[in-house]
Length: 330
Image (cartoon, rainbow, N blue to C red; front, side, top):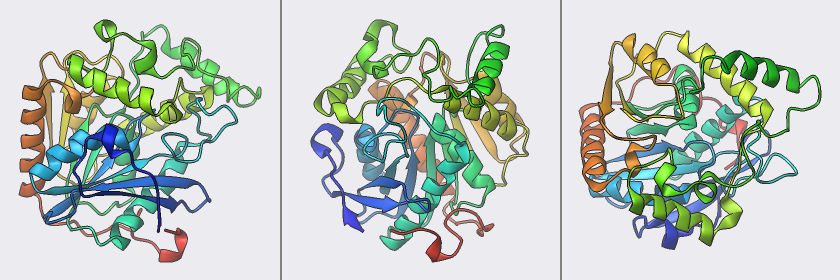
């Protein structure tokens, strides 16, 4: 694997860090970051959300390393330093959500090729929770999973939902799929929103951490999603909510002040997940891993306990990371 840049000065991750370029099966170049592998007893596959990049999880990797876990995080296609998918580099665009599973497969194979300590566990945030749930249905080889504010539905006013379906569905046949979703701009969210009315965290210092990263590396910024992304997200979340949950120990976090993903969809999925637990955190917003120190300490302690309690990997079901090695280059 070829080394890739990793800006650990703004990530504030563990010192034993590295990054690599990996290639998805369809030729899209992705970036992988690895932290804390020295002496780790297991590895966390960290699936970021929409607009995110690996450096955003440097502090999370440090928290996990302090508890004995290596972390490997990915820049999904179209964001971070991975290949952008549109001539407008700040447009959050994807033609098909299924393409993200090629990224998962490339990530899983790279983690194996790097010899990272097993078992693997999944930690998936927001859009990463949507991608992660689909990957689990496909047989991703992990022993357990933690979701934070998983995107199993998008929060919007009830009267707006039919319009979102109709407009986004019509956009592709009309050749408008790459138009930005109405009401969303080209600027990164943390650039455009002041702390006082932000939807991500109630902790000013952590919000500053995110803002400093984008200010230092504006090439990693991503703006609003395209109509194509919106339609694919609506279709994928509707399909996932209707599927029986996979037989895997799952812990899910939801903030009481969640304003981005749909809390009802999360409660619906967790309500039928036999080995799943939902923990709702009073006062937390969208990013429980980036709230104040007391919330973060609680969350990472519970995450580590969950992973340690479920240390035996399940038998692969033939999904990402289990197919022929020729399917992807690393």
